[in-house]
Image 1 (cartoon, helix red, strand yellow):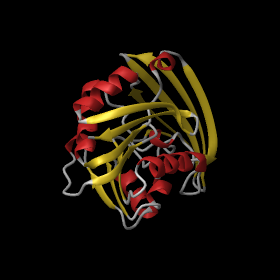
Image 2 (cartoon, one colour; image 1 turned 90 degrees about the vertical axis):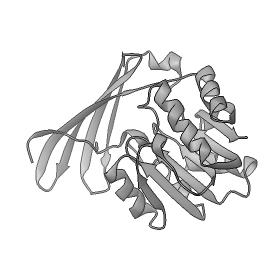
Image 3 (cartoon, helix red, strand yellow; image 1 turned 90 degrees about the horizontal axis):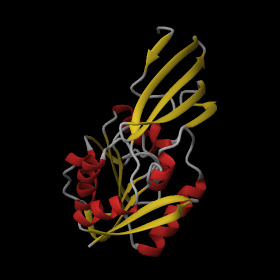
Image 4 (cartoon, one colour; image 1 turned 45 degrees about the vertical axis):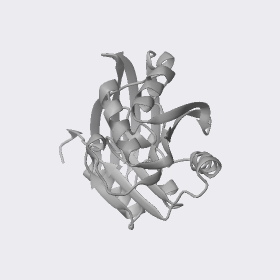
Amino acid sequence: MPAEAVLTEFPYPLTDRGAPVPEADVAAVLRLIAARRPAATALLEASEVAGTYLTQLGRRFEHVEVVTTSAAAGAAAHRALPSAAIHETAVAGLDLPRRFDVAAALGTALATLPLSALAAAVTALARHLAPGGLLLIEPFWLPDQATRRSTEARTGRDDAGRTVSAVYRGVPHDGGHLVQRHALIADQDGVRHVSDARTLYAFGHADYATVLAAAGCGMDLLPTGLAGRPLVVGVRR
């Protein structure tokens, strides 16, 4: 492979924050579902970009379906949950015959969408919920944070056994947050450099309330609902 490349699938997917999902996140979501939808058996997991954030969560449900625009993410979801149905399509275009107890769009699953596209995706997810079903959305950042510059570094091993050392830089851009990522990947064939960049968007309480109301859902914004991070909870009317 060339010494430098731009990957469609970054070695640390944008949606999973570059690390295995902490059990605390899974436990927090399961506690919320147990409290608000205790008889839940069917989960729809959505990601507009890459990766499924909580495949661990899917193992707790009898029926799981995953929607993603990423072929690699779909393959990863199939490996983690062989019984799950995988749909490679934009979330906004989803049209399934089944209704679900829970729809989860966690991590940065919908964060690449500006507000109008977010509204379309939320409407599609809500349409697939049974009455009283839960729509769980993790905000990328709250707006006061999204205006700040940020940097981050991470080193680890990916699913293929490669060692990956990655750095991230985020800056305000076009009403969103431009995240630039670079990584050195070491394997038996050598060391190579890969990079990519995406603009992510952050919305506040009023935006989510408006979007969810238009989709036929009530809303709670739990400031520490996801193991200390904010969680938007929509309830299908």
